[in-house]
Length: 136
Image (cartoon, rainbow, N blue to C red; front, side, top):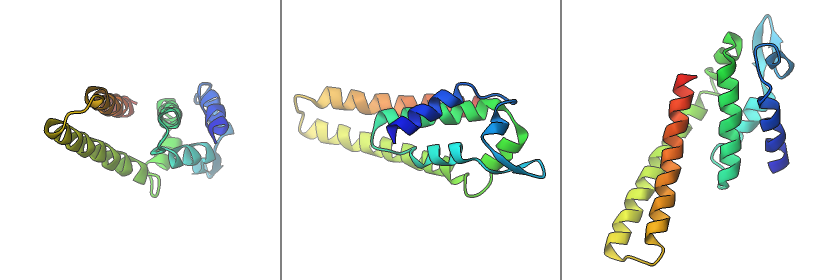
C-alpha cells in the first residue's frame, strides 16, 4: 500500500494538462474513470500520517492541473464526499484537541505538552491543506 502511494506521488509530480489524459478514461471528452485519484482518496483518513500526506500531495497535484473535465469529475458524486469527509475529519480533530486540553487541565502528565503540540500541528497541517485546495 505504501509503495503504491509513493508511486502515485511520483507520477503526480509529472501531472499537467498533457499527461493527465494518460491517467483517466474518457467518453465523449468527459472523464468517466480516474483510478489514481479514486484510490488515493480512499486512504485520506488513514491512521498513518505519512499516508495522509501522500494523499494530500496526490490530490493537490490533480487539483492544480486545472483540466475542466477532471474538475467536473472530482466535483461530482460520489467523489464530492471526500470534501465533506475532510471537513468532518477536521471537526473530529478539533473536538479531540478540546478533550485533550480539558483532560490535561484536570490531570497534567509528563507528555501533555508534546501531545497537545502534536494535535495542534495536525490541525495546522489540515488548515494549510484546505488553503491549498481552495487556491487550486
